[in-house]
View 1 (cartoon, helix red, strand yellow):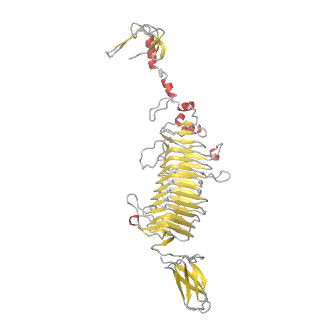
View 2 (view 1 turned 180 degrees about the vertical axis):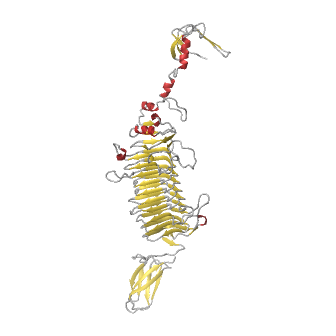
View 3 (view 1 turned 120 degrees about the vertical axis):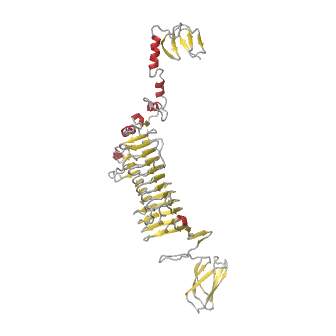
Length: 580
């Protein structure tokens, strides 16, 4: 054991007698001014430790013990260290002051403004933190559940960030780690609101509001009071929603609205970016997009909504990648096509009550489906039928192009319900559909032409099937392609439109042409002739003395047409056909 003793006079000797529970320390005479770095007027008599007739040392020791911060350690820790996550925090740790000292001035912790995850309404405290955040800054929500009684409004160029956003979770799952939870008496349209410059009264254009790593739990709000999870209204550019979970909202999960009073006319949010977003069990639409042009949505999942999973209107020049709609109360995707191109890449559906994708609209825009899969849609309240389809195109002049499309029927996960959808693809009163490739299976019909359509194309690589998923018998492809040829397999080549027919090019070495006999004969140079060619000859203009027509072939060189009359000068048409 070592004890450091310093004073105005040198220490003569320290003796520690060990071996007993209570050790005796003998200190030589002299004024002690500092013990272990702490100064004070402590006098220790040489006759023994604790000899203090005036009580000065006793009083000093008692004051030292009773002091809140006798060594200044807490003051140092408050300004230096952050509290351990989940631990008990006492006093003001001055986190933001420390960040300020480090030059970090654009990161505001909501706890600094009094939001600690209490059971009462903490919207005022959270909003105070948001309002105190400078442009380009971040409002930080620690891993707690924050109850709110009114909307939190996020201004331009501000990020509202938690620690984690919940993904897919079954009903009854544990509460999320970082969560905004509206109270039962919530007063407002949405848990989080993003407004444009006019509605928000901002000095700058509304842009780049960000919601990240956060969950919204609307389970406490009664269904008769519709409250959206996130609502964006008006001319808002490039809002970003990333790693966000929204569940049990009484209104829509994510909603976009027009500002009809915005100059020069109605304006809606655009250039929206979403990434890794989950919307679970909304009582209304999962994701509603009003004219959200030039947007990019990746891995956005809607599950178990009471209405449409997605409602998309006029969102041209946008791309959706790996988005999904599952077990919705109506259509999986309700899409109204507007100007431009809406691309859906690797998107999917499963067991939606209505159509998987229902496509309508009065604009001749484009919907491009690449490698999408539509599964078990059109369950129609468990009974199937109902003219429901995995892909329904109805009353629209738009152009729908599908490549690598997979449609499969089925029943509920537990085996209940009826096989659906009734149709794999249904088209009625519409302008253009191209099914380039894939597998389409419908319980009744794979591809149903319901009438009034202009163009419905099936590609050479498209396979069609009918019947339930448990008893699928695939029809062979209508066409197959080998080197240099398309072949019809197991089906006739059918031209079913009056006025349409077979067109064959004429020219050198062609399969179609005309020639004139001279002295009852003519040799036609043509390298396309084979030893097996069938040549069909018809006299078009009679000349001279007519005779019976025959032909001979020279494979790869020519064929000769002969008349039984040596004075036959007729003009004849010919057509070369090869056997299959």
